[in-house]
Length: 167
Image (cartoon, rainbow, N blue to C red; front, top):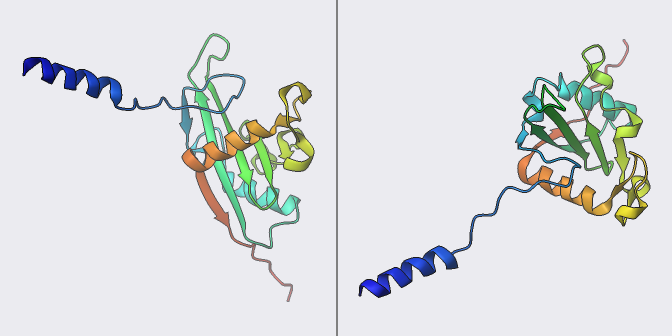
């Protein structure tokens, strides 16, 4: 009887699926956590930045869906203040935006930096050996960030901007 109980306990410990560790997209560094972009101190007025971005792309008069995911790393000798970066996925534009945070003096413009704004058709490649510079990513990377965003990030629906008509 004693032997059968220990066999059952060993089997329970070995046969049950182990809980998978939290995994992150391959960012070129290993984050130690995620954060809420819409309330993080490094991302000043994120909704205003989104509205400006959509107006810049002439898409502020229609409904838009966006997803935000932030990745952080505690301080290290290379980065004494730690690292906090975000990705924003704009569904209707099929764009993935690398967002290093807002600049205090121009928070509304922070999403419109062209080198950070990646389009699926133009800025993705199939294989890692096709990536050059900072403006191309693999399709696998893109898909992993978008999937991670929907699994762990924040989504918003941006309603059409209200326009005022002159009187």
